[in-house]
Length: 497
Image (cartoon, rainbow, N blue to C red; front, side):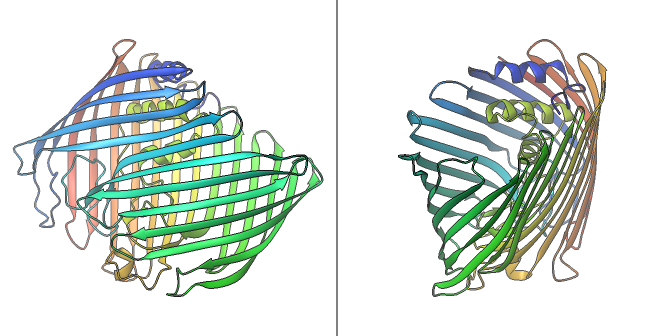
């Protein structure tokens, strides 16, 4: 998929990806104007037309060499609402992933952070643009610092140890506020290419919710792997789980599982894993196939999620997070991929921080089943992307008394569908169309929402560092409370320095 999407994207996106090599400092300024017939979803269902003006200075710092590698991308957006009672506001957007090699080949520190706009409730009013209203949205800040060690014990084994400290803070709501600490230690055989290999891994996790309770979840697991063929790896594991996620006292339960990794070619990968855990069955299935101008990917997983901003349980709730995962095999380096995805979304006219497939905030652990199908096709002048997702969230921590979506319904189901079409008109311009639908349902018939949207835009480069976009969108939101229909025109101007 090396040429995927590049064929239909403006040249600027490709140049930005190339410039990400080495150390790169890239300030930018984005301005936009949107005319909408309905921006205020405060629960009364009344339309509120307005002109939205937005100015977003941003800075991207990236490094692909030396002891420090990764990227930090931050933008501060000021939004002004003309002829609307909605208050002017500021929004932050951050995406950061940095790895520092403190001591050669032994000590490392990983730092990640994000600031995104997320829906508070999956059953509340949903929007496609973070600049619309304030009723059901909150700004979620997350940060994680993780020092680690890895090395060898003579000629006997390899070892790795990691300590993780993280925090989540939410503006306007405290539902997702939490702190967490974790420790992972593992040892394995030195020769990873042997016919039979082994590993022993242990993990400790502590999490404290501001609106919930403090929980712990620990496990110890031994694994044997058999290289049956050059392209086939079989595995079996056994261990024990110890947690208080389902009761006030710790419960211990034995675990076991089997796995398979098959790589018949460099372009085709299949991974299967099934385990019996303390909460029941868990599994992970991933299939990926790349061709010269296409990539096909399917994943299906079920596991415990402590992710407080329940973006469908996996932290892939925004457009940026979703496409960042989609293009992982095409652009393996995180810094280059961040540049690629940001330019890709800008060309399509999609907000990086806008919700891609629903989500909600929570302060308790849940069991999440997530299924995703993604397809990307590239022609000489055309690009097609298809993203389909289905998520089912069920509360695991029944002792938590937090009031969120899973306290009103024992299950939250969300499905998403997005079809993107891009046609390159000239070497410097393209026309794009995005069709999407999101469905949410709960245990009650009143807990059901559907949002459909159509977005069309034209993008062009006005020079090596300047791009412009003109477009329109049409959104229909069906719900028991506050349904709406929106029509909007927008214009964006982006300047990189």
